[in-house]
Image (cartoon, rainbow, N blue to C red; front, side, top):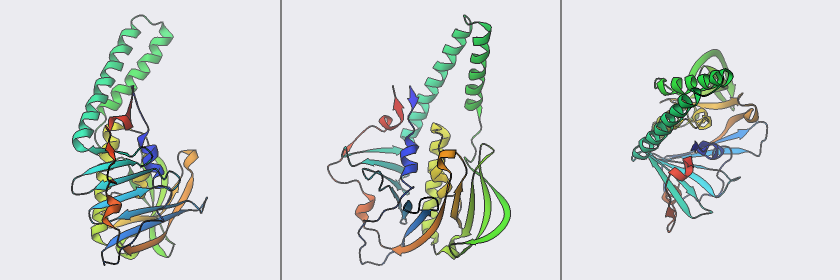
Length: 275
């Protein structure tokens, strides 16, 4: 059993923007944040934020989008090609985590048994793998991304911002330039939604360890700061810079944050677990 890289799809969902959602005429404080790739300008990532929801959608993968419900604290992964959706809440997250723990223990037991009949070179290799698994199991809960201030101040897209280094497991993965949310025009209600998503998504990473923290770079763990520039430096395939190029206050129709009618619910395990 292995973990499928679900967050590859989720991360792809913020690499390009939404351009076709209808906007109603009633005044509300929903926010649209659009980031544009410096390397490939046609790649635009738009995050739609309301007081209670977030929606990520990717025009390059138009059959997939993700919703996050702040009040209920769950993600909904929608596959329009299959007319299906899956829900990931904290209860399901705990269940998946338990299954992964069972698998981890089984792998450790198998390694220990194999070491009894292995030659010296094989034993050494197995011992290293076993040590790595044990270290991961004992790792304390901590923030997935550590932000270190670099001291440089600059201006990007007209916003004064502070350069910081974003580290994962002590290794730099990106340089962010973060601005005060008030300077960007993002209300506290939207910042609360973004912060809530970051916390939930971080807990998913902690328990399932899918190995990709892309969306956590776009959505920081902050009540009053957000990146106006994300310079990816790792992995090599993701090297690029995304800059905030548009912030809109608008009204997003409620239907944009709902699963289309007649869609069938599928087990979330299908998105994570492959036998």
